[in-house]
Image (cartoon, rainbow, N blue to C red; front, side, top):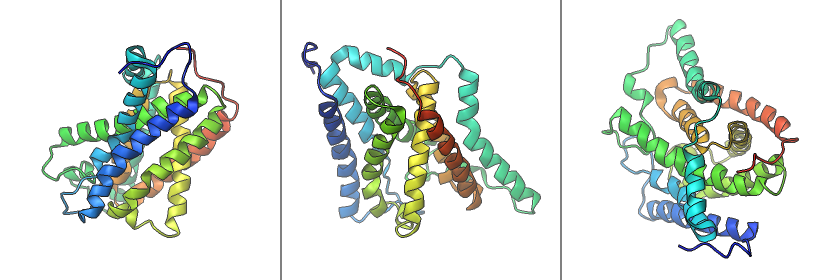
Length: 275
C-alpha cells in the first residue's frame, strides 16, 4: 500500500480510527464467530480465542502501511525486535511475574501442598492440550504478546504519547483496550465468571497493568519486544493452573501496586526519544 502524501500528514484521529477499526474488525469477527457457533474457551474444550488476539497487530500493520508506507513498517519492525540498552534489567522485570509464581509455589509446598505437574505451567487457555510446551510458548508470545503489544503500545500509545502526556495517553489506550476485550466475556469461561462485582476489579487491574506497560515501553527505548515478553510472562503466571488460585491474586496485586507507582512516575513523563 502506498503511504499518504508526506506533505499532508494524517491526523492522529485518522490513524487511530483506521487502527482501531481494523483491530475490532479482526478480533470481534473471530470472537463473534465463536459466540454464534456456541464455542467457549474452558477446560476440555478445543475452542481458542487466541487468533482474535492478533487484531491489534493486524491493525497496526495496516494503519502503518496506509499512512507511513514501507519506511513506517521498517520502523515498526525495528521497535518490535529492539533489544534495549539495559537488557539484563529488562530481563529481570520480564521474569518477575514468573518469579512471583515460583515464590507462591514454594510457599505452598512449605505448607504441605504438592508440587504442580509440569504440564500445569503450560496449560494455557485457548492452546490445544496436545500442544507441546515450546509451541505453547511460541503461540502465546506471537498471538497474545506481540498480537496485543504491537498494537496497543507500539502503535496506539506511540501515536498518542507524541501529542499528550504519557499519563493521558495511557488512559486513552486503556479505554480502547477495555472495550476491545468485551466479546471475550461471552466466549472465555474465566472471563465470563467475572461478570458482576469482580468486573470492576478486572477493569482497575487492566488500567494499572497499562501503566506498567507504558512505563516499560518508555523506559526501554520504546521496545515492543520488552512489552510483548512481559505480557506473555505475566499471562503464563496468572492464566495457567500451576499456582492454583493464590498465584493470580498475589501476582495481580503486586502488578496493581506497580501500576500505581508507574502512574505516579508517568504523570511527569516527557515524550519518547526521537526516532
